[in-house]
Image (cartoon, rainbow, N blue to C red; front, side, top):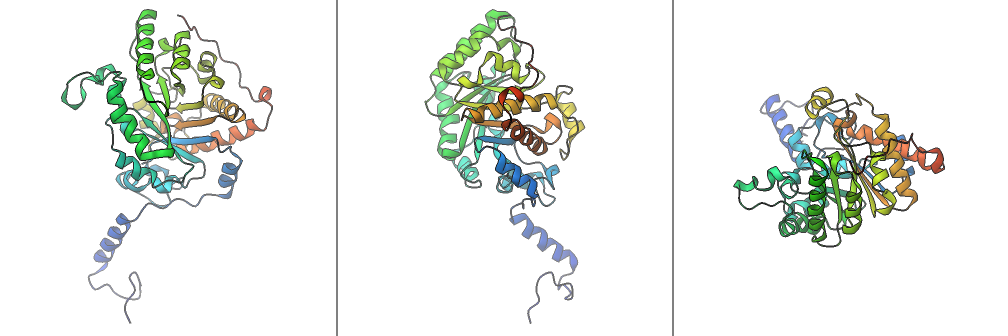
Length: 355
C-alpha cells in the first residue's frame, strides 16, 4: 500500500530533512491561514454599522500571529499572499495601501488585490508622494520636470490604475501632505490655493481625501477649499497635528460626503521610537484613550448621518493596529447606542484658524 506523506510509522526514503524540505516548499506555495476568531469578535462586527470601515496601515506584519494570522509567517509571504486572510478578520473591512506613496502600481496589481477580498471590503490608496511633497516632486525617477500638483500625471498614474483595478472596492484616494515648515499665513494661503487648483482639475467620481500634517494649514481657507473642490479632510491623530475633534471644529464632518481618518502615531513617540517600543506589534503597549474616544465619536456621528466612515490605524498608534481597531469598534458600538449628548468626549480647545 502506498505510504501517505507524514505517516510517522513509515520511514522517509530520503530522511527527515527531505520531509521537512517538502513540507516547507508546500507551505510556501499556500496562502497564510486566518486565525479562528472568537465569537465575541464576530458578534462585535455584527453590531458595528456596515457603513464603518476600520482597517490597518498595510497588512504584512508577522507579529499579528494569533490576532490575524493562525501560523508564524514571513513578512514577504504576508505581503504577497496575506491579504485574503486579513480580509477574513470580521472587523477589518478596509486597508491602507502604503506602497503607492513611494511608487505608483499598475491596474493589474490593484486587480489582484481586489480579487482577494469580499465585495464589502475597501482600499484606501495613498497617492504618489511626488504629487504633494515638494522635495520628491522632481527627485523621483532620476529627475526631470516637477510632478508637484500635476493633474495629468495624477490622473494617468495614480487615479486611473486604482479606479480600474479596484473598481467598486476603491475607497478614499489619499493625498498626504507631510510637514513643510510653512512660514506664516502668506505661505499657508498660497499653498492652499495651489492645492485647490490641483484638486479641481482631477476626474470626478473618486473620493479624494487630503491629510495635512502641518498645523499652519488648519485655517478657514482650508475648509473653504475642501468645500469648493468636493475633497474631504482626513482627520488624523499625529503629534504634528491638532486633536481630531479640534480639526472637526474647523472642518465640519457632516458637511463632507464621507468620514476619512487615520490614527497614526502616539503623541509621546517619534516614528522610530514607536517602532523600537512596539515591534513586533502583537500587543497594546501605550493606550491612547483620547484619540480612541474622539474617533469613536466621529464614526458614531457619521453612521447616524448615514455617511460612510473609513478609519486606518497604524501599529505606532498604540502598539498593535488590529487590537486598536477592536477596542475602537467596541467604543463606537457603545456610543452608537447612546444619545449624541451622552457620547461626546470633553470638548477640545478651539483652533486658532487664522494665526
